[in-house]
Image 1 (cartoon, rainbow, N blue to C red):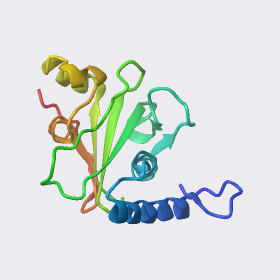
Image 2 (cartoon, rainbow, N blue to C red):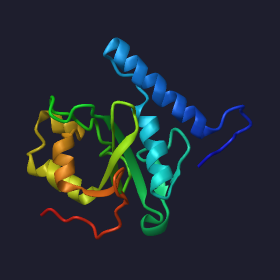
Image 3 (cartoon, one colour):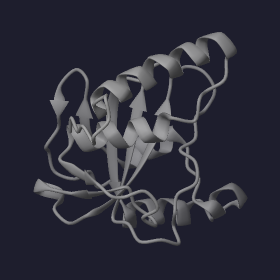
Image 4 (tube, helix red, strand yellow):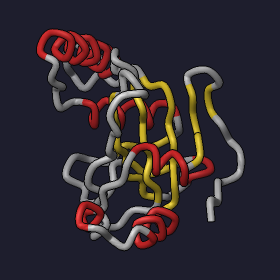
Amino acid sequence: MSQNLGAPYSIDALIAQTRRLAAEFRAVTGKPLPVSGAIAQYDASRLLELDPVSAGTAGYDAIGRGSRSGRRIQIKGRVIPDEGRAAHRIGQLKLDQDWDILMLVLMDEQFEPSHIYEAERPIIEACLKDTGYKRRNSRGAMSVAKFKNIARLVWSRARGREDGPPHMPF
C-alpha cells in the first residue's frame, strides 16, 4: 500500500509520522489527536487485503478482497494504552447505512496496531437489539469489551493473520 501520489512522501512514511505526532501529542497534552480512524483504515487495508474506498463513501471504508471479496467494511480504531482502565467505547456505528462487516483496530499508545477484530452486521444488530436499544445504543454505540466478545480476532501483532472460521457467539 506504499503509494506515492505525486507527493514527496509515501503514504507509509506519512502514516509513520502521523503515529509519532499523535503519540507525542497525547503524551504532552493528555488528549488524543483525531487521527486514529485514518490510521486504523490504513492498517486494516494493509494487513487484511482490503481496498480503501474514496473519502465520503457513505457507510463503509473499504471493500474486501480474498475471503472478504466484495464485502463492504466499516473500520473503527481505538487507542487503548491501558486495558485495565476505564471502559472504552467503539463509538457510533452507521446502522442506517450499507455495510457488511465491522472491523475494530486496537492500537497501543504509539498508535501501532495490536489486534484487529471483525464481526458481521447481523451479529452486531442482534447484540444491540439484545440490549434493548438503550439510549446510548440508539446510535449504535458499543463497548470495546462487548465487541471483542461477539467478534473474532482476524489479526494480531503476535501471530499475524488469523484465518479461522467466523465466530458465532449466539
